[in-house]
Image (cartoon, rainbow, N blue to C red; front, side, top):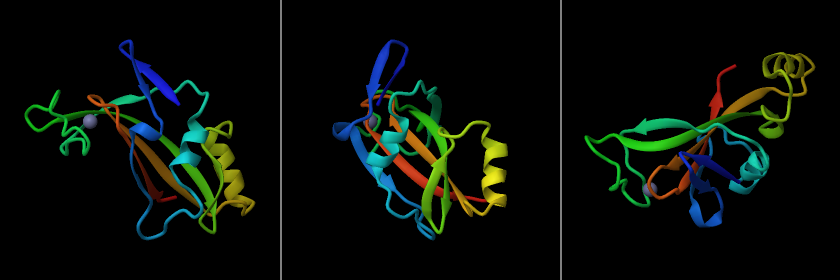
Length: 135
Ligand SMILES: [Zn+2]
């Protein structure tokens, strides 16, 4: 999985992988960073600029970190689950909201999670975080 910003290419692979954080209270079952990267593969994704108050764990954001504002790129998607197992995700369904409601009504899913992919602007290391998303 890779994406380009300002002619700079960021590759999300094993080398750049930093951390995977699942929801603490109600973690999604049978999922890891490889599953998430597989979902992202071969898609045109718009990563957005994000500013964090905590620097990159890998490079400490020494290149761009000033005034304790650290630059990252961020991307979000949603996982739709049943009994904490992934059924589908927001990139695999058309018309997200309608589809999700339909799946919910048909009891094919019973919960949703937001997945945040955070990429350090400086060194390209990335982290993946999954949090339960209130329906
Ligand atoms: Zn970094």
